[in-house]
Image 1 (tube, rainbow, N blue to C red):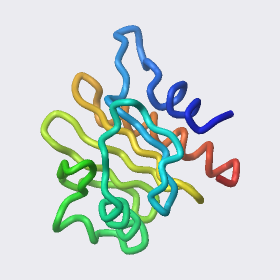
Image 2: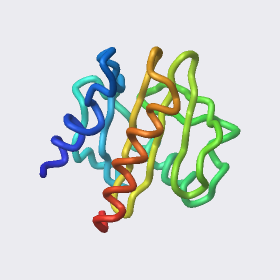
Image 3: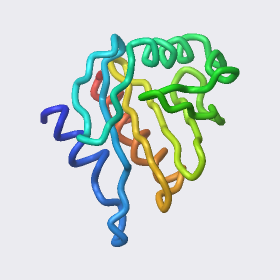
Length: 133
């Protein structure tokens, strides 16, 4: 299965009969290389990915400054140190799951809930970790 298929069929899929889905999603290597992304995924900078990776290595480093992605600042909220970073901005937010080789990133806006975004992103992340990826 191609990385783009994971984004299109798993991250950007409709999750209910209301046709709700993530606003955008991507799979990005730990080095910041885009493996696959939705058309709507924001253009990010290498320093933004470095900041995310640093927070996985030293949990809590993003809390004072926020998580930045595509120039948008998200307030960092409860996550799982070294495994998941969650951010909130207004009625939307972001979930970042770290696998052995990549970052699985999902961005959402209402009516999608934070829990739905977490479920989508973390489920795929857990699967990829089980596959050694």
